[in-house]
Length: 442
Image (cartoon, rainbow, N blue to C red; front, side, top):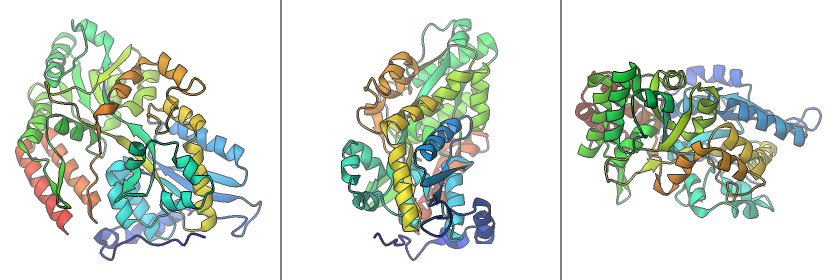
């Protein structure tokens, strides 16, 4: 039987500073995943919690459908899904409190940008260990391409199971384009700025909204597509380099559109997405995982094209989404958690997930199989842009060490200072990079 071992390093300042006053309240609020039946209870049912970031506008119904179907077909396990607000950063903060209080969820979505932090600081059962206890575990993993499994690996070990895979695309309002006299969608950022001006001039609406959740995913795509690197590793040491000239230029473009041209909207993610689907913004750069929500709610013809490039520079977009981690401590719960993960990664469940969100399936063959996603992909042209970008994927930056959450927050603060007009891109990014380098070095 697998013996649960803490993977927490001795020095974990986040835990010491984090929420210990609120840990008991969080633990009481989540109720803690309890084992029934084998662990003492009635009905022989093992109850586990599944933490996710999927709001109503971001696949929440698909989560419920999948959990309900799993519970129907697995009478010995009951999964309770718990939505965590504020995306992956919010989930991580709540997860730390739950672990500190001794009541972690059994399974949680961990954003790829927090992969290294979770691996180093949060006690969990690795996917390698879970699969090793399952007689069919290796055969299951063999159905995934090695580069996809790499999304869940840290230092060669499969820590989490890659699940949701997304990339940023440009959605546009074909009706507003026609009213503005724009004949085709933009392919470069210069064309985006030009078209945004035309939309503002001809229709009075904003031309662009670039997503602004509590992460820097879209901004990383802009910086890296302009030739910058958010994080550079040399001789095993990581250094923040998102204050380079190329990074500053990418941010300057966005700042100019928001503050100078007044053609781009600076707003929280849900508000910005709502502005687009209500016809008040001509273009939005956001995840393909919003495809179902946008397509279902927009009152106009929505179209997509790949993420814009900076002239002839190669497109480099981070692979968004999350890996599924097992935080259950009880062996029976760990077994139930692994069964639930295998179900979520089954071709049938991934078909529901892609249709209900827009996420690309991590498992081989599902996209092209007529029993699963091929008919949907053939009938849904909005997905083509995301598939076309797959060769351009790069890793979503995951800050190493014990202070990954603070590093992410430093970049968020810089974004808000820049787009809020309080600091220049050069000044804000340099200050943030210096702070991140100090945090990494601790």
